[in-house]
Amino acid sequence: MKEYKLKEEQIKRLVNHNGSCIASDKITVDGKKIGYMYRENPTSEFDTGWRFFAGDEDEQYTANPDNFEIYELNTICNYDQDIIPYLMKPVGTKLERDDKDFKEVND
Amino acid sequence: MEQQKPKELYRGITLNYNLLKTIRFYGVDIVPYYEPFVDELGRKTDKAGNEYGVYLSDNYQMSSGIYANTNDAVGIMIDKDFQIRVSGQPMTLRIPSVEVLYKIDPTNIDVHRPWIASYLEGTYHGDEWVAEKVPASEYTVTRLTIGSDLLHDKENFDVSNIAEAEAGVKQAIERRRQQLEALYLELKKLPASTRYQFEKIDLEIFKDIFGDNGIKYLDYDKTQLSSGNDYIKYLIRDNWMSNSESIDFSTLRYIETIKQKMPRGFTVDDLIQELRTEKDLITASKENFIQRKKANGELEDTTNFDLRIARVSQFIDKIVKKVRTSNDEMHMEEEFGKTMASPKEGLHRPVISESVKKTVILHDQKQKLHEMKQQLLDEQQKRQQEAMSNEEELEDDFGMSM
Image (cartoon, rainbow over all chains, first blue to last red; front, side, top):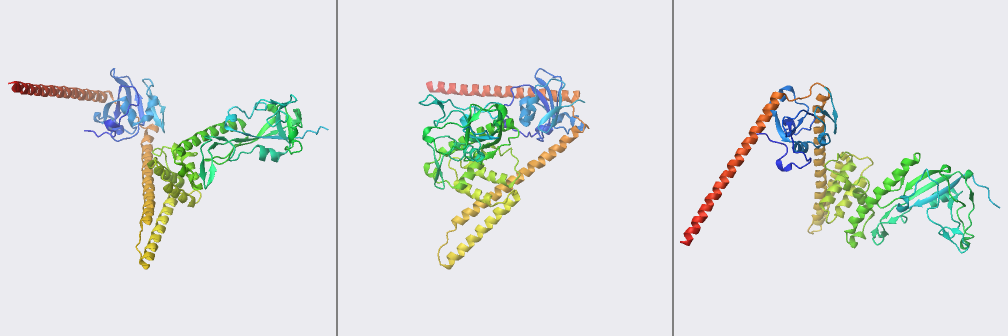
């Protein structure tokens, strides 16, 4: 059973978006800030396509499904409000943290 | 005989908050900022009955020191019926005025000595000249100063860029107005007996709370404290917030006294050291007091000393705790910076593979299904219990009717 950094009662309504996203446990369990995020094609009508990482997840870590969970987008905004201005970016966007902001990166 | 025009003329004015909203300091001609009066001879006059126009002077001292001069009695009162007393002196809360000093090149301006009202003849008028207007091309602003007020000292603006200076003055005066009004609302809550017994040190407390960078406007949970003065403000804020219904002036004055003892640019370590010294001094005084009382065969009541020691100890504890928290936060930020360094270096950017994603989604769906199943079971169980209790009630009712 995972122990999340934020309890259910601590989650506030920050964005009016009910879609889902996938986030790494480094954010929700270890409490790290989001360092890297990208948006891919959604897998369902509820999925926003956003994937969130602390940024230091190595290949071994990302290969383990137990290290990820599906969350409501608003929940992840509660873990790191700095992402809110970027949530309307289109599919294909990749953003890396630059202090309080995020900048687009291309592989 | 008409006097020869001087090479330079000056104009000093003092503008209140309301006038400041409409007046420009550059790019516009200077004209009188009120409509003329008319005397019995049908001439246009100023408020004093002298010739109407823009007044200039060849006496720099008069223009700079007398005409462009704010002082405590100048400015718009926030509430004319509201007063405080500081060390016995009555004071009102005023939005300060602004001193403006112009230098004018009169070469291309029609200026002459003004005629003056007959009742003022024979008095000194500051070597004045008058013009209908001063064109924008013929003057420069050489000084722009906001006067002092209860929360702020006098403030000079750099006039080398007059556009920036004008914007700066207007912003600053607006900020001051808001801060003074916030202070006014707070002071209004106090009984007159408290308002009439302020000391000069209380003005420093008000500056720390309501003035520029005052604690009222800072979110201390998000503010990084670094200097010793930051921690003084932290103590003031802590006390002020915990006693918002009844301001604890005694403790606030004590904190302000500590601040005044500190050297310029003091650090938090200096502050902790000063508080420890303070504690040692009070402890030593307490010991002396006990010895003296014992020697006289009197009972000693050390409550006052104990309270003072407790207060200083509390300050030290609060500061040390805050320093530790700040250090932890800094450490966390450093660690965070380290973890962020790797993707920036382009070594690795995490990505979820399709197979991992499918497993996560599947797991989530299973979990949701499980939750739904559990919810259904719970509801079913609830309904069964309700049905059973209804049956029992019916049986009871039926039994009673027998």
